[in-house]
Length: 457
Image (cartoon, rainbow, N blue to C red; front, side, top):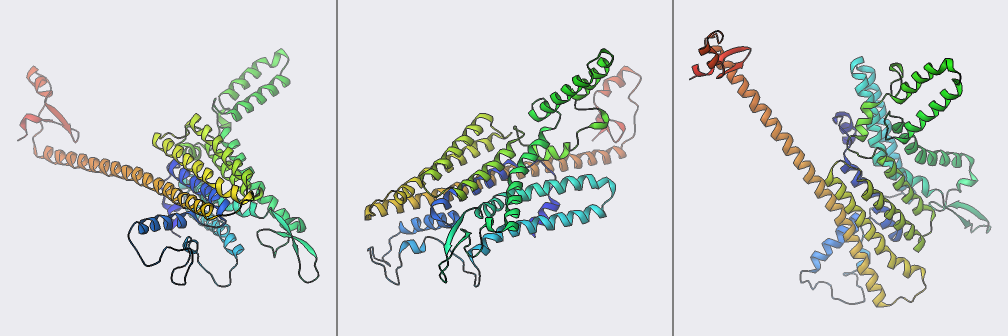
């Protein structure tokens, strides 16, 4: 409810780069963390690891150090994560709840915006239309990873042997009680539509942005060349040469007055803080690729290698283009990529020990536990660092806004005070003689009247 209210009252300003940075860090590091630990949460585990490290620095003799556990002192691995039990629920229910919540938020927002649009006048309908599309972009920006996670988790299937008559059926790996999507045409069709939306929405967004009349957008340049080729094919004789030239000039300037590209205000809301106009498209595909690799590639060295390659590619693109107007935002996202790469590297020891058939020893278990604790704390501290940077940035913006508001209020007060003083003074002519001209240099205009400053007390 609070987020819906925020979408309705939020000023229409360009999309902040900080929301992009935090969402991309959170979604990708969740995939990297879950690729080895299953459904664990790096936020909960990281916070517990930090608190346990602080607590272990204090002397305590409540639980003796030993390899055996007791009811009063359970093993450390049992306390490493926090879980919430909902009676009667299954893991698939909680998995689908994320997507259902996103769909409900989007549906309620569209319905409320349609009601506002119908009740508003003609003047405000354009602004409400921009708010509708911009709000849907924000909803999708937040829920894109959840949607892709749900869709891609339905792709892997496995053979399940029934205990009654030993028949083998193809079932979903995410929920073995449901048949595989290849066995159900309706389920397969819905899955294909969802995956097509995941990959075609960023592509359609890039094509729409690229049609903006600008020389640095390859989509517009391609469209202009196609129009030029059509003109050359239709106007090869000399009689149509002048008309062809007019069309070429019109196409190079973006069209005639009746064919003006629409959506400039919405484009400004999406790209106002970007130096690379298609950077949002790359971020969408980045999140989709990480979720796809996590879903279809088996857990192992191959999966972690693909994650590392994807991270290196986006680190290179970020260092080459510096996509944000803010230098602090560029540095912060570069730092987040470095943290993601470190988390990816820390996954390799656990993966190697799980793939290679090595005998588990006390030393190896202790080493893996230490790496796991460091990884959890590092992932949580990275998110905490982003939160601190965002808090500092928005605190500075709030301070500048309050300072400018105070200066405007003080200037308005001074203007009113001078206006009130000018009404009490007699009006004097400052024209004519040279003495009057000399006094005019010491006069000020307040409230439309020329007042001699020397007459002020």
